[in-house]
Image (cartoon, rainbow, N blue to C red; front, side, top):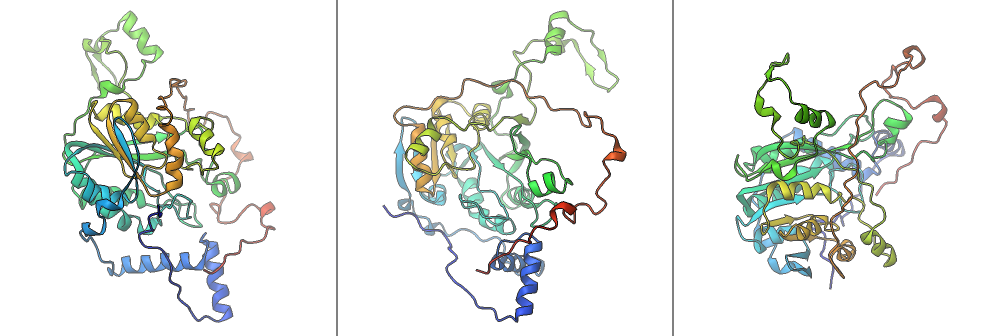
Length: 413
């Protein structure tokens, strides 16, 4: 079975006549800004120019005939769901029925400035790339359904400043496609390594980036939901309050705490900060991939993330779809929770690994929910400020002890 071809592979080359001095100068500027090649640098410059000059083509309706349903290859079928190998736009436009999906739970390739093995898109072109998917999402989603997108941030090449691509994506989904932002969530990964290393560990001008934004959207302002499905344990102080009671009165903060506050609802309403460590390195999926020499998907989210939204926003028998299936974590969660489901993925290698989540038997959801994570109070460690001066240049230069290292070279493509 042939692998699905990339939608728009870069197979063309263009010759640019430059003097030795011009080439050296451009390479130096590109390297200083963090670009890995001259072609990457020129593409970003072109994208910025067309955006500033208003030359981009703007929103265009997708030609659905480009994504026929027969391009999707059935890969694996279970009692409740199915994995499809191919472009999910074929599923969204020509396989799934309109207004048939209760939850789209996905983590699309992030708009990173450096290419990853799982095919992420350039940050500057991310919204244009995403538009056909947005149109397809709106087509298949029920009025009572939800769209949940886990998406990480990116850094501007060569600078300790952040890209706005994921915020632009949110604005596009709301303003151009009519989605409503129900609530933003933040997935805090306590086990995240201190990255980006250049700005966090070397130049010491930024802190660890450990949070992904999770946009919860819907076609109408009132998708079905019930937060009693996702309660968390009461804190020790709340348990004491429920046990010993309290005096109902107006608090200094202005909140009027009534006697109804003393009711035990079985748990507390969780915040929109989801603390879930992504630490699984040994398990059936990983063991299978290593044994079969199959690449392990490098950007898997933990099962508890889709589990939270599947429980919160859907009922047993509802349809859950992940158009960027990867190793099909959403699918195995949905199968365990008795939801119908579909996952689409372009990479056959990742699907060969995903098979282990369902064969020879269904991989269960993790029983160990871990201990509650503590977030330390700011400035919790005492510091003598005169011994730790600020970097007056804001990290523009590397520390003196590292400046002797050779500057990175880049190759023209």
